Figure 1 (spheres, rainbow, N blue to C red):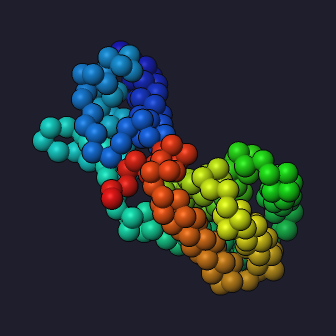
Figure 2: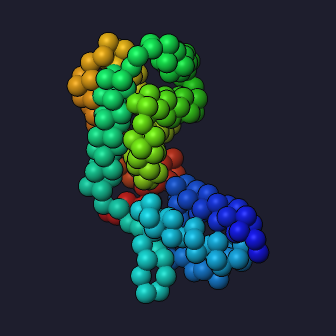
Length: 239
């Protein structure tokens, strides 16, 4: 098998296995058997092992004597992951404010902000999740540092840290929907701080924004059994 073929199979295995973990098809504590996975995915053992190693490095798998096991997380782990994202996005927002030279750079992310307003008014939850993810990706790009951008992306791979890890469909209470409105206002405030060159304020607001995500997790976790199908990542949380 050529190196290109091996890399292609590794990426396919990585994408498939990560997806199975994130959508709840694999639960915390599940053991992954190489022979069975190789047959199931239709790939050879070498690229599969490379994919498993990558998932271990991402924090999704734990390796023991018997092979790999899907990692189980505590609720504290979930909160720590969200806090870490807030720290990294806060750093990116501060750097964006300090380095901004041409306000036109903000045009694209402002368009995303307008699109988010539209879907909030229409109540299209799935569209909100997609646009929210896009907004946060654009926010990380504004800092002008590939290193910081890569670290934000790495943190977002953690099961609970991504901006839309707990989708808007999980709860239809007034409290949860109101949090989306608050989050959108925080988006605006972060951009305003960046545009005005207020680095410290932009950093603070981005970190506070992550803490709003923590409160949404608490809403989802309050009734884990009810929300398990809508938030499959809960299958990774012990307790």
